[in-house]
Length: 233
Image 1: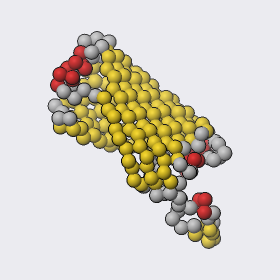
Image 2: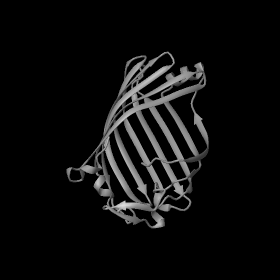
Image 3: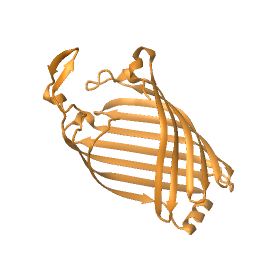
Image 4: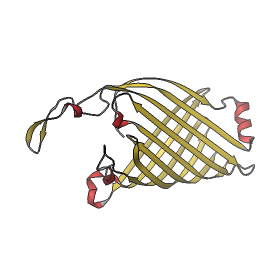
């Protein structure tokens, strides 16, 4: 995706038990469900990631871009939702885990950057001991850009989660085959089709009701050999 600058106004809604009694009840229940909602309006000083100057160098010659390709500010309204469901098979804690993430952004003026993205995972989580578990899962992804199909992807992942006192860490490896689709606004998008490999660690440190979270990761995007210039780390 694109790096953006701007001012963000938002509110958050999260449902998750935080008390000790709530944690015990959660672990004994036959299933768990949690959800997170983040929505708001955002101003971007350079919504189209255009150059600040229209004077550029093209093929060794000075050139002037059309104003439509220069730096342009815009507002958008965005929504992010994340949900997780876990169905427990036995008292040890083995079960089936499903996750869902959805994101959508609607630009006020630059509608060629309207984006919708959804991704789901599903797979069994196996308990090794009371503080450690691992999961194998399938991945499905769909993205719509400028109101046209942009990405379809499928893949698989493996993760290991461990907890020590109030600190939790989960390391994972994921593979996705992503197929991009051309459109009128993005006529060469299909050249980005290829494999995406991700290795990362998610961490969470709790201080009462306060949670400090972090992610450390590495991505390798491997495009087709004939468009190797689209590969990146």
